Image (cartoon, rainbow, N blue to C red; front, top):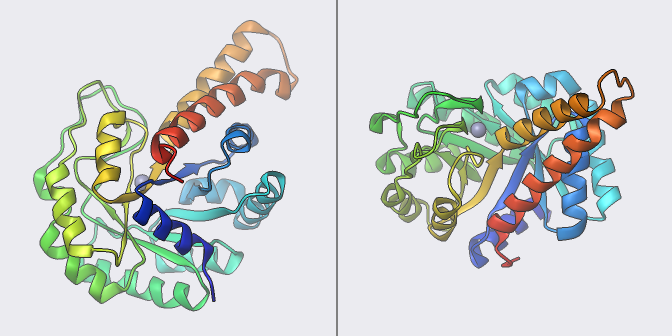
Length: 287
Ligand SMILES: [Zn+2]
């Protein structure tokens, strides 16, 4: 059976662009994403973390994805981001997610491989794309005051990559090359691009490389990472930040306002701008 998500990832690999994943859990975020996508017409992945998916519920998330697709007349995909157990990802697959990400980065590699392999076996039969993770990506999707400190020993080891993809059969792999979740003080990011190229040599065209932490990393480094083989980039924090500051502005300019859509419109606009900026950067007119 033809898998449209794998086809787009292959196209990204060939043409040298990256598909964005935008996480969401509210209508304001979706509206911002839809408004940007309506103009730019680039494919994208909607993501929900375990927390975001628990808040929405799997069924609502899956139905929302379908509505967004109809609204845009564009193919949209839904990924369960950073699932920590086989059981949780199995439920997401059964509910209708097109992609799942198993994050076993805090486990020993043997355990990480064993669970990832189990997710792959379950997902592949159902046409679901599976992302694994090797190496530890620090941070969380928020604004950090402290400078980012990356320990080289936590980065993805190129020599482990071949074994990991061979023994798990994953379609995509999230890697740690100096990236982190969240926004950090200026100058925090210095991606290890040499390491990325070494990893790319190990995987060739067999696996799609994923960069988490698409919010904080400077555009120049993002472009270089795409050039060296990254084909999917996750964005969450900048959308969350736009949501918060938009709502704050909404309350500041309309004190006492209780009509949600009147308070939310600023947030939608700010999110739209973030999504537009990321789409243009990741696609660079190469789609
Ligand atoms: Zn992530």
